[in-house]
Image: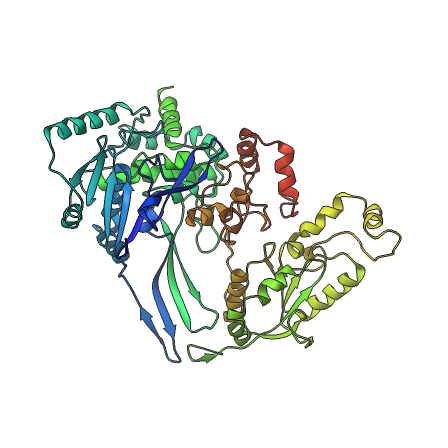
Length: 329
Length: 251
C-alpha cells in the first residue's frame, strides 16, 4: 500500500432504505476495504478509461510549440472486482488493444494494474449469467472466492503469485475443493433475473420502428447516467483547452454518452438523433447488436448498473422483455 | 500577451453590478492565484469591487444582478450602448434569480414589510434580456470562477464559447458521487445545465437549478421520479421556480 495505489470498494453514504452505497475509491488503509460489498454504484471503468484524460499537453512558444505525451502511470492494485467487471475489461480490450489503432493510454493502465477479483452471490437484478459474464477465466491477477473462513485464490499472473507468497497461503485441500465447488453451485443457483438475448440482434432490426423505444424514451431524462456507470460504454468526445496564461494547452478526451442530446449533432447544426427514444435505441443497438456483429459478443455484461442508477427506472431487462413481447404479439 | 508569436489584443472589460449580492463578482476577485494571468489577458477598466479606477471605454461588459429600478434600467442601456459584447453574469442577470421570489407578492406590501414608511425606489424584478439584448449568458448562483476564466479565454482568442448542453448528472457521475435522489433528496440535476462540476450534489445537497435548463429537459419524468419517492408535486414545483431559471419553459 505504501508502494502502490490500492483501489477497493468503500461506502460512505446510504440510500433512503439504509443500504450502503459503495464506490471504488483509493484506500488509505485496508480497514477501509469492504469485502462484503454488494455492488458499486459506478463500475471501476474509470481506472482504465478516465472520465477526463489529458492526451497531450503543449507548451506554447513564440514559434510553434512543444508537446508532451505521457503514457506512464503509477502501478495500481484494484481489489474486489466482480467477474462481470473483469469481463467488461476483456471486451474493452477488444476495442482498445486489439483494434487497428490501439489505445496506448488504456494499455498503460491495463498493464500497470493488478486486479484481484472477488466472487459474490448475485443480487436480485444481476443478469450477468444471461450475458455469459458471471465467471472470469482470465483478465485478472488473482480471483478470490469466499469459502467460509478463508478465500480460494485462483492465480493468473506472476505478480499475483509473488504477492500470494507474502501471505500465509496454503495448498488446496480436498475439503477446500468441495467447499469451492459448493460455493460456486450456490452462486449459480441464486441467479433470479434472466434476459433472453439469443434472438436480440435480429429482433432489434425487426423492432427498429417499435413503439417500445418511444415508451421508454419518454421516461428518459437524457442525463447520460447509464453510460457513465456502465463498465463497457466507451464513447467519447475530444476538446482542446488553453490555460489562462496562454502558455500551456491541452488536448483532452472525455467519456460521453449516446443518450445526451448532442451526441449525433454535426457541424452545420443538424442533429441525427434529436429524440430521446431514438438515442436510447442506439445505446441498446451498440450494446446488443453492433458489438455482437463486430466481436461475436454483446457489449453488455449484465451488471444492471444502468438499471440501478436510472432514476426513471429504465433497465435492460424491462426494455428487452418489452421488445420480445411486441415481437410475439 | 503573445500567443504563438502573435500579439493578442488585450480587450478592455468592465464588470458591473445591479440588484444582487455581488457574489458573482466575488468569485472573480477571490482567486488570487489566477488574477495575475487574468489581468495579463484583459485590461480591467471598471470593476468596483477591486479597483477605484472607472473608465467607460470597455469593449466587453460583464453584468451581474437583476434590474429593479428606473435608474438601473438607464444605466444598463448605457452599458449596452458602449459594450460590443454584453455578458449576463449569474442567475440574477440571466433570469432574475432569487430576487424574483419577491415577484410572488404585491410590491407595495413587500416594500412596506421590509422598509416600513421609508420610501424606496423599487420596481418589478427583471432579467437583463427583458431590457437589452444579451450576447452571452454565464449561468450559476454564483457563477463558477473556472467557467468565467474559460469564457474570458475564449473571448480573447475569438472562439465562440460552447457551454455544456448536458445536465448536471454527467459531471456528478464523473466525480463518482452517490446520487442524492437515491439518498432521499430532491435534485434538479437531471434537468439543469452542467458545467458547475456538480458542486452541490458533491456536497450532498440536491441541485436547485441555478444554472437553468439543459438543452433537453424532461419535466414529466423528473416529476414522476420524485413523486414515486414520496415528494409532493408542490415541493418539486417550488424547487423548479426558486431561481426563476426555468420560467418560460416550465408550465
